[in-house]
Image 1 (cartoon, rainbow, N blue to C red):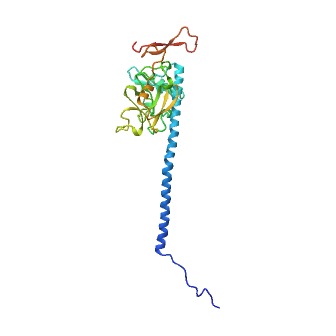
Image 2: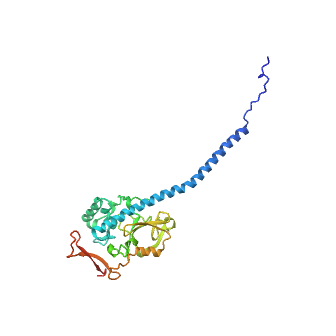
Image 3: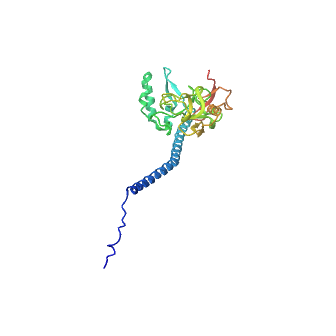
Length: 299
């Protein structure tokens, strides 16, 4: 009997070098396709992820400003005026700034009491250096990646603003508190929260800028005083009624200047006259027996 397998031709095929090369090329091509697809997906999703993160940081910044605005209003409720922008010592040097003054109304009194006691005991030898290591996160915008301890939130002092340095203002002086700016942002100015330094009305560029549209010096700081932030196309700001609003970059400079001007309320005797509280002998308010009187700063 003949075994059919014995006469069967050998049909086995050995892999040739060209076949192996083709297989490797096919695998490499598939890998490149996958890489291209992955890069394409990343290019689509990454901006969306970044935008979501920035939105979260912007909301966190707004929460910081809400806390600060509420603290300023609580200060006003207690003392019937906003904090002084700064307080001068015996040598005419700025010591207490509004950020220090509002601390008891934002966080615990311990830090404020420590600062006040050191200032009273040191006198002319008082130094801010021991406080530069203290970082208060609510004074800094989460979008701003700067040295710990620095602040992103500033007042605009002088002129017809809510901060007529070195004087203080009260809400009765505001024509429209809901449309008068109290606190604004400034990106990368490099000011520590304990330093009594802010923006000046007479040196301010009344435009709102993002970091990408700002001019910087070789040291990395802005070349002009501006309202700016690390947010996209705008900045957060606090108004005198405690409201927080996002001001877009296309806001007119004239509108910004008008927002910084507190105006003349109908009860003001004449433009330029400011208010102060004096004891009222006829008052029935036991806790706060005072009334508003108007005076000229030149008196």
